[in-house]
Length: 115
Image 1: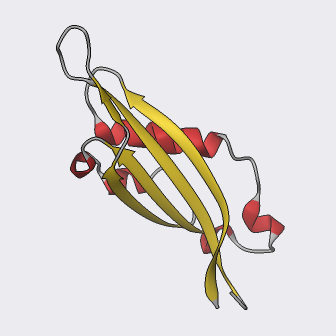
Image 2: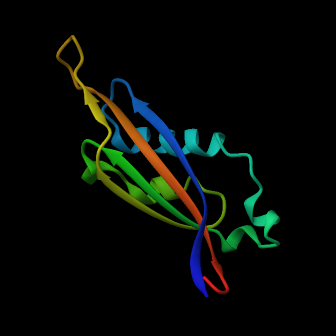
């Protein structure tokens, strides 16, 4: 059996004033989840716990993302989160901490025979 990707979804999240990279990442994941109303596991006669969910978060400071907190957003599945350099840190006119923009890519896979 091999891992077969079935679905990819994208989202964006922000932290406007606190420069909270984890919160921006969580908001990006929630945004991606809200775009998806497909009952993927049921379509293939699988249990939701069998879903292999790979999450990639792009932010300006990936080392400041609590990947365990991001993974906790998911109610089921086997979740793997990786933070990478990306997203945007947008300077504010008042010179204070920039607005943080995170981008999330979620891929859902299953172990499938013949893959």
